[in-house]
Length: 192
Image (cartoon, rainbow, N blue to C red):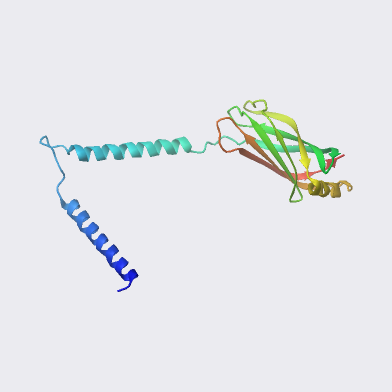
């Protein structure tokens, strides 16, 4: 008899014993105290089940997604500032809109600009002013492009046509572990 057959026979024996003990426990009368109520052990099981169900239901309500509209970002413009060695600096002007019912507090911001599907510039900003409900904020972020990203941007600046972009803003908020990611896509002209 091989190892696999021995293992299978052992598992079958364990399952058979478990099934027999479960059937015996199911047909056993419930423990009751002298007053006719279920025993303390059974009562404790019922309380634990009720508390677990209440905790799960309240957890589901706490984690439910509210219908408040999410903040959004809009790219207003991109302007080339100057070259510093192998890097080119750009001024990326964005608008952050808070249509929700709560104040949006921002402890930091990371900006990624993709032109024609390639990451060409990224920039960072420190703490920003809080956005009250139903308001918008316009801000400029200095973004740096590495040599290849600068070449990608410069190849399209000679022609006056607009270029496809994808803007990604990652907002870091106090007391939140994951950043809030806002994206915007469209076409933009890069000013010199």
